Image (cartoon, rainbow, N blue to C red; front, side, top):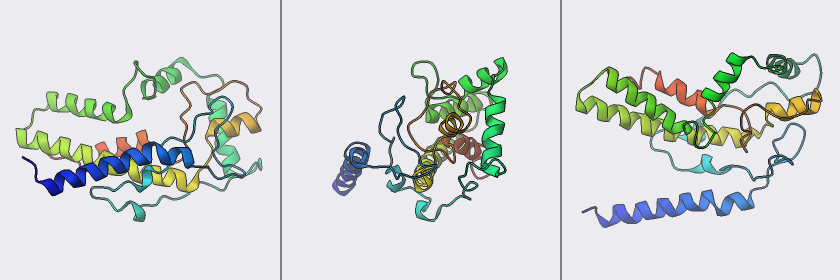
Length: 212
């Protein structure tokens, strides 16, 4: 039997998460201005979990987590920002078969076809443990570390996304290079910077995560 204070605390946490996931998302108005992320005609859905960066973490102090911001937004053809967008546009026009395969494999957004972002790394851990059988204690430790690391990382990641609220590269490319159509994979409804998939990949191979 779980102690009553623990149950009450868990219920409050669940209620808080539900509030963040539902009510607050309706009230959220993304900032406006050059280079800021906004819903568009093709993707009119509201911002995905704009307040998730405020969720209480297990270990990391997400308020002290920061990343080096990208180059300043500009349409100047001689700028770093423009050259990076041009590089992406050049690579993707047209996409090679290999690039399409890689994009689909790492998408994590096609319901019924690909993994969820967190499910992908749990699956990779499952495969790794099956091929390198550890003790039960080490296996439990691995899943424990993986779960906490992904949870805290996502909170920090989402806090950074909505701190800078930078428009997605396809929006810039469509506007500056007059590109028609859209991205090859599904367009998520949240700002760019610090991709969650790349962040979790770094966690999985971090020395502090490895338990044997």
